[in-house]
Image 1 (tube, rainbow, N blue to C red):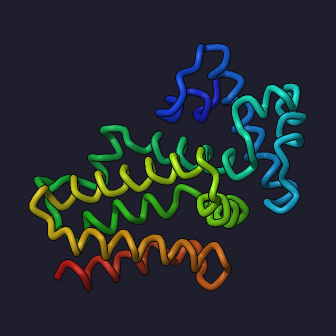
Image 2: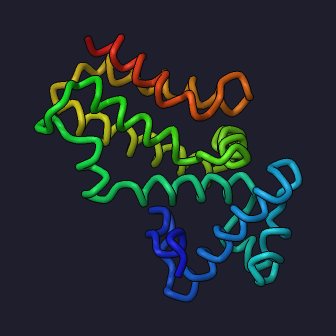
Length: 198
């Protein structure tokens, strides 16, 4: 079973084992289709064809390509919430400066969509005014804030946390629109973290 298929489902829906496998197939197919045809040409029907499922089945789980791409992003991000990943970026009790721990958290978030086509697709998809995408956007934002506060400590300055989150979304928007190289985002966020936290 693929790594995306193994992940838990977004909190809004509980799936049986068979349904989870179907969703996993669709998410893997979405990544392949996105790489091959790009975001503009991506369709839920095309993803269904690649996954070997009926379009109606695909639409049962994903009402739009934005929802599909947002789910791919969420699954990858949620996958990185393991204890090993927390150990990598650290908590408030981990050695290192608050800025280095924050930079690690934000850099990991930024590199979830590290392929150019996926990065551009996520930038557009996560801004969609679709109820399912809004739910995922809220979940992603909540998880990012949680990881950042975990790395900085509960007494972290809320304004500093908010500033770091805004810098992250701004950097991703710049990368998604082609104004910033995607691989430059982690270093930029490290600079911002140092500026904000020291």
